Length: 321
Image 1 (cartoon, helix red, strand yellow):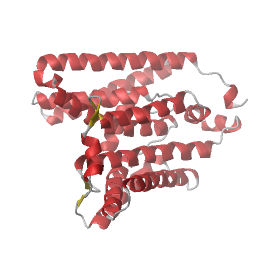
Image 2: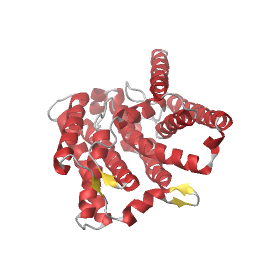
Image 3: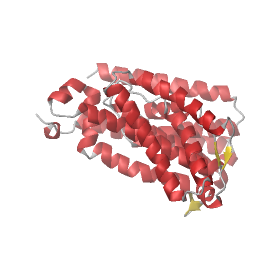
């Protein structure tokens, strides 16, 4: 039986919708509580800043979700972001047109994703190992390219984009919509999205059903690399520099956002809206904690506790099937 002939699982779809509504309710509750506890939270400047903070992690979380659904992991995305800031900064300062510089940077992210796919599919390396190796290597390559220095970007038109807004909404948040809408259609309404879920559920059964498992793995890691490189471009525009040490630890935030958003680390379960909400829940917690002068260590503890609770209940759900 071909994978196209397999109907979508209604219980799983209903679970994703219910979980998404629960996350949305939690986010709204957090905003209400923080607005009461810290009046400055609801100010226009703070909300805009929160949206900017959450947007880049949200885009990374979407790319990470594609990988996790297949049963893999991508630990390199933070390093890809930092490396992408260096690439786009060097290109723009060299006089390359902004659009071309962005395109080349995105292609670098695609190439890194293809490399991960090659390591997993052809070399038989575990996703954890190949992406961890890339994480370490890209940081080193970036430092060699910059001699350990930051590169100031000499283009006001490039950096202005991330600091401006459209109809009162920060441009960076519009980029979340730009990524999120096609990602949702791709994952939930295309055969390629069904392939990702199928491979994460049972790779061998998928292969016997006619799914090109190797191509699907390539696709998942390529999309993750592309999203990370895109975030690198946005980060370079926001801070105005290229620095390979930027986005350190962001891979963990992307994974946390995806998991909090309902993506199962066991594979085959996930959505696009969940990780997006998860990213803004984390951004809200961090933003609110800063306004309330809560020790930053507690922010990490809260994030870790959320991950443990959600993964625990995900395990219960799986055993209850």
